[in-house]
Length: 485
Length: 117
Image (tube, rainbow over all chains, first blue to last red):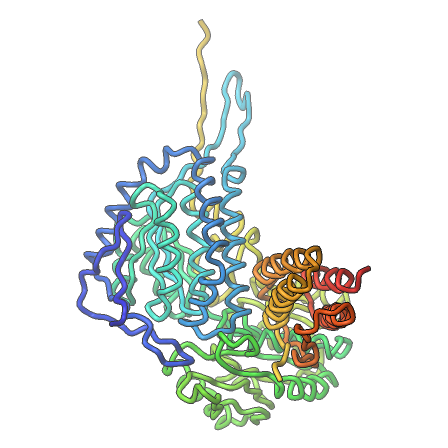
């Protein structure tokens, strides 16, 4: 019988109160891996009560001890590294290399959490006035929650959890119901840490539990990663309910390739950026703009290299691209390619009918290249979140920058060039939160903030980096004077 | 034909190669080489876990595991020399395809060690 997942609340594995279950499939083999409960407001409330009860003891736990838990957590994750990577492949469909890379990036965030004692220090001034000292202290805030997506089922939750709890907060995690197993295993590891009960809680579910998190008065702040329409709802609902919120949304990331770029190396990297994780990442390259005569060379080299990509089951290490996450995702991606074709794009490489031997029912979409894409087409404006790269022409570098800045999204943008002047200008003028120079996936490491601009981000403080310390703490100012004698 | 077309495929091939060679040298009575292979296997497993940088994962082409098949039956001196040179050639040829410096360095060093340098 297939496993029915349980919530982890107050240090116990407990049944969710709801009666609805959603299947968790391996998107390559279609094997039913587990059933995920739809937790309701009552389950969220239990988790919040548990987290609130734990908060008092946890915030009094010295920060060095809290950081020590993160050392142990890191060791447990390292010990189970290969198991975690395999779970990511099985529930998400990406390749083993990509899953290992994801777990490694998660470990970077645990490393960052270990550094919280240093980053929580604050400053002060003696004699700000005569005999009066003024200092700031950072304090944890209370209960935080994270609502996380299917595309990085291990890494994204771990962007938030280590920093939040090492700062002294308690935490509720609601992973995507499509990919809950990575966090199920992670919480089994967390259970081994013997943290005080309630410091970390796992609540499974979809919209109902997310709504309950957004509205619960006991939750001080919410971190979210997902699509832009949902990010906007999360931001508006959470702020209306008095919470701090960081909501990272979708993207339409552009890459400008200039005539002076090293074309072979650039295309190799663009390929990884467009088709890595089957295009299901918020930093995926979606549109490549060839400037001047770079366009034809870019297209030829892309078609040449992409045609050789080996698509297959992620656990086969020779697979260079895996599946998309679900049948619905595949249908949406295929429909968007068809819509692009209807609007006038030319399909140079068509992945819609790809079949992988041995996995004929798998959720595969082959790497796809759309040519002659213009800014008004849906494939240039809307997030596809699949292995589809649209090619656009620009007569000049300035026109390429205009095309990029015209997008409603602003998560990432990259330039491939050997010109320092163009690279500098690109960094300066392009409106995106993450800029790549000869890097197709401009993914900030854990010590840098990760956040987009425009419709790619709703909030003030980004995830990761020092922004996350500000997000997960309050600064209190202490002004003190001691009377003599 | 098994293509060595990804970071993981190359590292897994290296781990398997060292595992096979550790056993082979043990049977050949060459315990120093056997333990060196066992140590390298551990190192390659660590590299596979640690040196995989998601943002620079790129396709690798032109390499196939069949080109590095080892004869692990012949434990004679000449057999051992052939095994060592095949292993050295494997590492020498796969190292340039790695775009993570830590991994490339480890593979280059393994090539030198198998070549007795």
